[in-house]
Image (cartoon, rainbow, N blue to C red; front, side, top):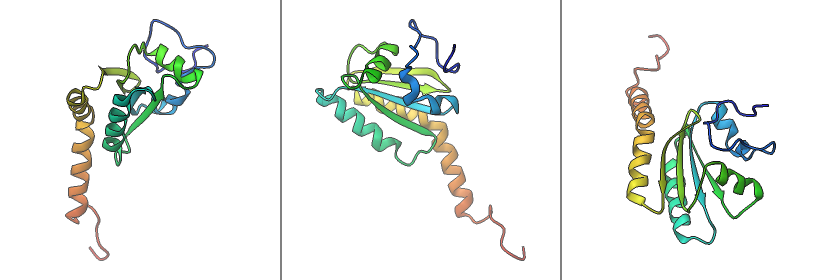
Length: 143
């Protein structure tokens, strides 16, 4: 039985208690997801996670999820599913497919990947803000 048909193919199939349930709603609705694999014992993990959580704030089309690789068995399984070998690891998913992966606290590379990943969204948000602020998108009574 395929639990999440939109998942990218991996070397291992997810188990019946699929840890993907943490991100399944986003994958099923074809949203952009950023998975941050972190460890509570890694100070670099908290830096990367905080940076991405702040960056995602206000972007409704992007979900940023954190998985503590030393946490629950479900999160450990999720890390195994995505072949995470070090923390922090940031995995960018678009429509359920991995588009990019950054391993380590390479903040410059992560910022560049995030900018590329969200570029089309920011352009869309900016154009909708401009049309709303110009007043031309909402007709007034009597027009």
